[in-house]
Image (cartoon, rainbow, N blue to C red; front, side, top):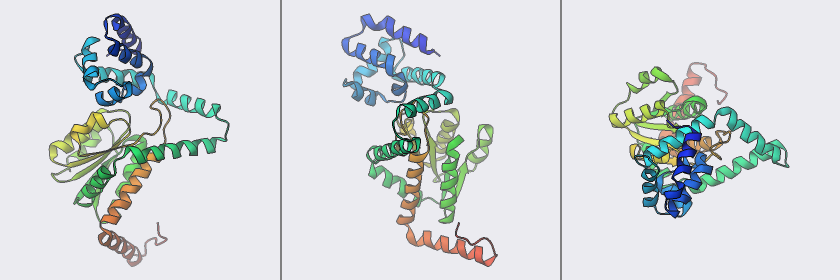
Length: 289
């Protein structure tokens, strides 16, 4: 797989024989490969004000078999250049240039991303996700790394609503222990950000093969998995090369939880009452946690 210098050299060598529209694409990719790595052909076309067909034709013009291969190269370049350390460096640099206290800057940035989520998530798709979850007999929720806390929260709340929920927070071969439990008509809520890794792909592919309904919560992977899932809930968490928090996805998970409760209030409240009765019956902690 090409490194950044090889990718840049390829585009620069091809520039003289490209059309004007293709030259615009090449020049954009040379300086914005981080953002372009996670755009679909349609999104990239909109960004550059060219046709989607022009984007598709561009890939063979610079020696790739098609747009999918070009996108894989861009994502490889992104992963090799943008590490957790560089993300944090970018975020710290942004904060240093600000004139407000660090707390005020962080809160204002998170509010901006939350506001953007109001426009990037389609209410109709969100309602579809709620219905799929509310109608499920059993749920699986995938969250790896830092996103494990999203999966754990969702599992806890759904179980308290009386919906059997299994979290998949393991890594490597341990994931298979949970995959073997999936059955047709189960529902998977998968979280994945930036990187379409082998583990997320394995969970989604197996759920699809098994006959599960699938909801994907992501920032940039919508176009990668759109053909494999039923619903995509996509919200940006800031520039792809920056350090990110879970504020936006946590807000989405909380909204899903409350949406499920609103869609079946009698069942949800009844399950919580039974939960509290069990605590009281057996002398367990009843402080409302």
